[in-house]
Length: 343
Image (cartoon, rainbow, N blue to C red; front, top):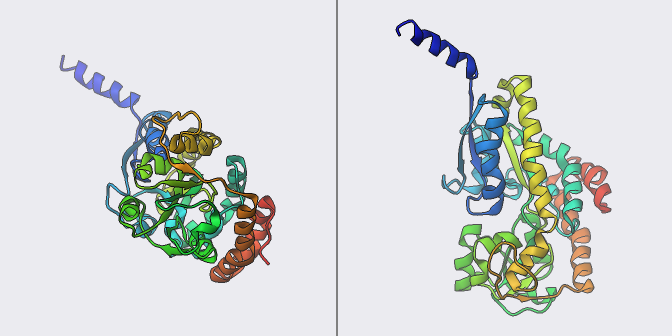
């Protein structure tokens, strides 16, 4: 028996990875489908299994850690954790050029949104390297960002004079140009703000609003994508990334594309139609019980007015704020894909 114990131990050692790389991962909003359906299975199961146990993961979320939304990527760059993912718009105070990733009203389908993101990715990679000492692993969508109102509206023009929570800085600028008052309220605080009249309307993904119960405190849904697609960037601390060998880097790159990014984009294709059905009862709701919000039809005139303000006011203002050659880089990449040029 004494001779057998060392043999068993040696056999077990040969079967296990010689060295397990542990990653501390901070996910996006814990209660939303992107985290529950895609982030959690990828980091908890898909990647560790694909690595044969060479990668282990400790997963939490930024809201479970009570992190300030603007602190998520700076703390990543400092190495407080290894991997983080959240909405890129949360980081624009430190990187105004990042607003060019998710421009409202220029991508109306998931295919168009992914083409826009793919075109922007080299710029985004440079921004995260230079601003946040990190390497971009993936960019995934939340559903299109639409308008929930606890106020009777019948068109886009009815937002004029109302207090509206925007989903990002560029959306806030667009709302202000439309005559609304932009109000800064965090996602978690929106239901109370709508109920108490702090805001009249709020912009978020239709599916996110359904999951978070915004239909309980709002009556009207305006399904124009005023907030773009709220791209969620997954990044790894650059020092951590550089410490991994080439095989492990290649494994993570391949697996996150096929096991996380592609499925998240695939599900986004029909998300808006399904989510509107869930919120208004207009059609079948695959996510659960349908609700009864009033669906406000978006007219061609509404869309054209918003798009004209975007191109004549909002994008040029962003180009000035971002400075440098960012407007030209955007024109040469994203602009070509979406057919918009910043003058």
